[in-house]
Length: 284
Image (cartoon, rainbow, N blue to C red; front, side):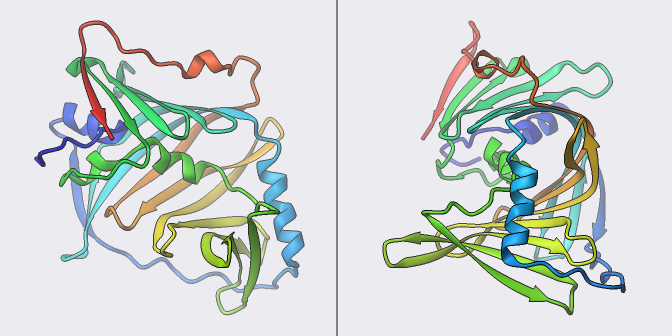
């Protein structure tokens, strides 16, 4: 372990309490090419409006999902899958999120984590540990999944349209792959840097993928969306694959149930105080 302990997350905590969590190793499989068929025509403004139609109605949600982590050994092109755990994810605009990792079958809490977009807090009942840290604190653990934080999940659960004053959008029409790619670029003084890339299937105009970038242009997150369903009038993907290429892991999130814009999602649901008798760890 490194000198400075990294903040634990839902997945690494689940792994720590599940000694038989290693499931299998398998070779990386290249995804199949897209199907043939007529392509739909859309403008940049049409696609931005589709993002608004997805994003704007969502003020809060409660997702219950199965989450499966995978670690990639790039030197061997081998993926290692770990045990699936249950998670409850509670979100409220603008950036409040709470994630509970649940022990399979008995559904006791493995970990309780909250974040307000800047700071996160983690309670680990079994280890009597409580962690407070900055979301952008350096990742220091040599154990891949120990560097996962709430933002890694939250970034992929929402798809934001370009901000009118701070961002602009450029459209790529990739007919070879039957994709529209909307690249959203952030403006800061005279500098332009990529912020997000949003992919649309030209057969359906459905959002299928979102990449997010850091200020240098490196990919921070690569999320793929499929199996969209209607949840009480809100269209949302029930299968989300989240890849974090710089950290060499990915997560498969399969939505079991989803409730949107419920009146009970209030500020107090995102308050997590340190339980008595627990050890405090600060990560900056």
